[in-house]
Image (cartoon, rainbow, N blue to C red; front, side):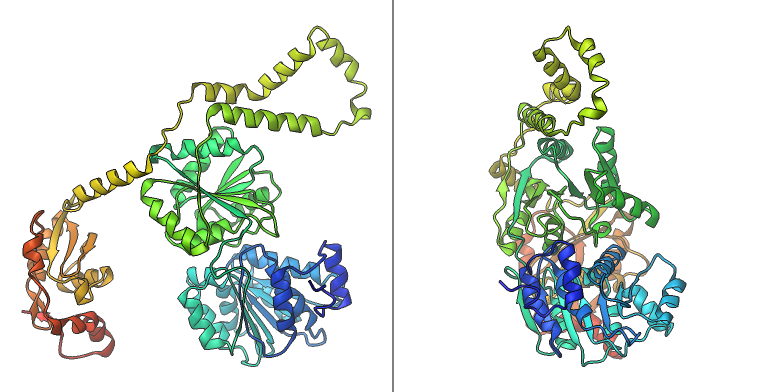
Length: 580
């Protein structure tokens, strides 16, 4: 293993990082630093959060700063205000002994005038969120002509948040003769497009395997009925007395509800979601960072950029829709070589998603059994005893009080004092778990079959308030949900609320509200696509044999896949779809 000195880091920076406790380079630092110290070296680094990324790009860009040139020489783009401030703070720490280096965090939610004023004075490194930087560019208050280093940190997160166009606009204004480093935990298709367009023969550095989860994270899942999810969460939290973690929920409403329940039940928790003001967000996150909060209940969006060390657990109160989100969630624990646990509380329909995630991150999820009441009480009790054993006693401060305390308790035996101390601390929990029913364990095989039967029985039934229709176009015709919705809106005047869509090979089913049903059927049956009539009729429960005979003509397959977009994009005067 090389040292930071051998990597080419200068003495002033070495002094600062040694004071911060940096001893030897982490793998990502050892791989990336030499490339960024060179010229015309583009790098794609696939690494999880907490692997030492900031130092990997921060040290070499500080090393290459020309202090005499008071113009932006390095640009770091990141997805959120919180991450922007954290990176800028780390760079300030690394450059503690570098005289005259100016670093400016640029982000929304703060005064743009003060940021413009600082830019006019001259800065060397800009750390920015894409939206605010683009705003400054449009005002012509930031000069990117001297940029020699471009860093895209958490690139996949920026693209997920819809910054693709902003990133393209920014990169087009930067000289092509620069080093570019793209950091990402995952490698979705959108990132590949950026690398092909803006990077020159990039060196790909993978810490671990592509999309692989952190090896120090233990992945577990608990399969429960929906009604028991909150009770399961409480048991998990109680079983880990020293838990310091994030509970991820899918919606703002669910986030607030779960946080409120935990607070009402005596847990040290708070919520973080998009409906909070920036001041409220900052207050909650500061409490969490200094460990005044034990549990943070958050949505994915609100927690983006939240960089907190020493998290012991990440709890998924239901799995996210995409695997990248799970990777980012779990990656918030087990940072900087530590260990952590990622737990999923899920229902039976998410079992396939558990398997899918496991394959992609190359991890096996352990099936957990929820701890019983007695097991939880025992775990809490011994944790309390450990605290008593390790508590620091300041003899001088309590010496004057102890004679009175001894007199007050002299009538009690040692065993009685211990019992009363434990009862004082644990009566609430002991009472709760003494009367609590055990949570019913889900028989996965039985539940899977019951779920299949239930879905099968509902397959031909419309949701309440909707009517189900048959359509004579299916997957073999290039039909997709978005195209079906577009077809309905093109054929039917006025607004139509579309419900469930069920695509088959040669036909499809879709649902619309009862009030629109007759209008939709009448309108759509008056159109044709490439000479083939659209047929829409009320769905029948047992008409699959008849419908399978309605096979589309081969000549219509290719045309239907593109006809809607062709008409819009190419401005054809002859309509591939038209009214009969």
